[in-house]
Image (cartoon, each protein chain N blue to C red):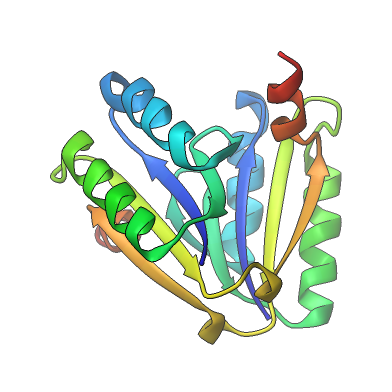
Length: 87
Length: 87
């Protein structure tokens, strides 16, 4: 499956969730990750997010697609994903 | 078509892009909008974003799907979209 994860979390948890998601997915923009996951990987990512965030304050949305082919991606401005590979 | 727009723009342009996108789509989280657009609406949104952002500094990603049915949405923590309707 293909996932896009967007998150809006307390500043004290931003680094932790970013570090965790970097293990599984590609950072594409501030608070946005995307990539391929198997079902079992998805469960691990979901559990990891649950363990990191404060569910009364933070918000994480996981968009799930059966296949990458169902989505087109149009970038306006700079592609921060490429920039982050260079830095 | 169904779109998810995520943006990472200079602080001086955040309100402008948010105000613009609110006309066409649903705010779901900081820097994240989603919703249905026709082809002609999509073109207007794309042009509007082009007019607002600084293409050398800002980054906007538009994820396009032919149909909403191709995507599942899982929220962990709070649903800021509901909260924003109450405020």
